[in-house]
Length: 443
Ligand code: MYA
Image 1 (cartoon, rainbow, N blue to C red):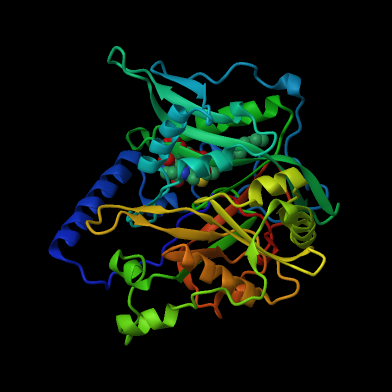
Image 2 (image 1 turned 90 degrees about the vertical axis):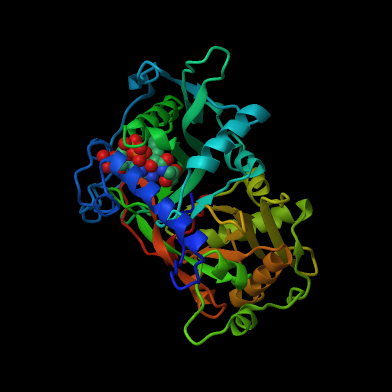
C-alpha cells in the first residue's frame, strides 16, 4: 500500500471558516489519539515495546543484517500444525470472507476504507480507492476469497445488516528477494494490504487479530512468507522509500494545502514552472494493447531482475496488472519496427478525499507504477508520463524513489514528500537494501 505523504505547508491563506474547520479536525484527531492511548510521537518510536510484533517472526527493530546461517525463514512449520479454526473474537464480532465480485459487499469495503483508511499526518487527506480499483487490487490470477478478511459487528437493531468494521487482505504473488549467501530467492508470498479498522474501534488490539487471522488463512494454503508496506515504522523494515510529488495543477494543490507557494514565487510563475506540453513528445508512444504484452512482460521481468526485491510476472499476471483499465491503471509503450516493446511506463489512479474543504472534495493523484526505458531516456519517458497524466486531468503525479526513479525526480521537478514508506517481509530474514534496489510497487 502506498502511504500518502504530503509536503504540507501552512503558508496558504486560510479563511476564518477554513481555519475553524481545520481546528475542529485537529481537535477530533487529538481526541482519537487520546482514545488510542498513545500519541503520534510515541507511536512513531520504533524502539518502543511491541506487544504484538515482538511475538511475530520478524527481526527486532535494531537487529543487524542476518548472517548467512540466519538468512531465510525465521520459523518453519507444516500445514498440519496450523490452527484449523478462526481465532476467537469478542462476542459481538465475527469473521467473514468478503466477496469483491458482489456489488453490495464491494460497496461495504469501499465505504469502510473511504471513511477510515490511511490519512496524512495532518488529517487533511484520506485515500479514496475506487470500487474498480479495489477489484483490480484484490482479484489477480490465483487470488483467494478467503484472504479478503472482514470483521462484522452484530447489529442491535433487528433487520439491520451487520456492519463491516475491519478489513485486511492478502493476494498471492511470486516475489524474488536477494540474499547474501544464497543468491536470489524466489517464491510465492502473500502481499498484505488494506488493513483498516473503523475509527470507533481503534486502540482495541483488533489489528493484531486481523493480522493473525490472515496469517492463519495464508498458512493453511502452505504459504509462509509475506510482503507489505506501511507508513509507520515497525520491526523491521527491509527498505525505506520516500514519496515525491510532481504538481500538475499547482493552483488547486496550493488552494487545498497539499503544497505551498514557494518564497518569491507568484501563482502565475508557479503555474508556468509546472506547465507541460499538450501532447507527448516521444515518437510512437501509445496505450499498451494485448498484442504488446508478451514482449512487454519479458522487458519488465528482465529489468526487474536487477533489483533486490521484485515481483516475477507470468504473462497472465503481467496482463492482469498492466493492461489499461479506465480510471484504474494506464500503461503506455513504445515498440520497434517488429512490434517488440522497447519502452514501457505506467501509472495508477488513486484519488484522495480532501477532508472538510468547502471548495474541492477530491485530489486526483496518479502514482508511478512500473517503468522501463531502453531506447529512450527514463527522463524523457517519464516526462511523457506527466504529459499523459495531465491530459487525463490529474492534479499531481506521485513517485517513490525506488527502482531508477531517483534519476528523474529532480529534473522533472518533483518535490519531496514528508513521510517514508517502509517495506517489510514477514518470516524471512534478508539483508536490508536502499530504495534504488527496491523493485516492487504495492498498491
Ligand atoms: S498499511 C495500512 C494501514 N492502515 C491504515 O493506516 C488505515 C488507518 N488506520 C487503521 O485503520 C488502524 O490504525 C490500524 C491499526 C488498523 C492500522 N501494520 O488494533 P490496534 C500494530 C502493521 O490497537 P489500531 C497495510 O495495510 C501496532 O504496531 N501493524 O491499533 C499493510 C500495534 O502492535 P504492537 C500495525 O490503531 C498491513 C497494534 O497494531 C499497523 O486500532 C500489513 C495495535 O493494534 C500497520 N499499518 O489499528 C500488516 N498499524 O503493539 C502486517 C498498527 O506490537 C501483515 N499496527 O506495536 C503481516 C503479514 C501477515 C501475513 C503473513 C502470511 C505468511
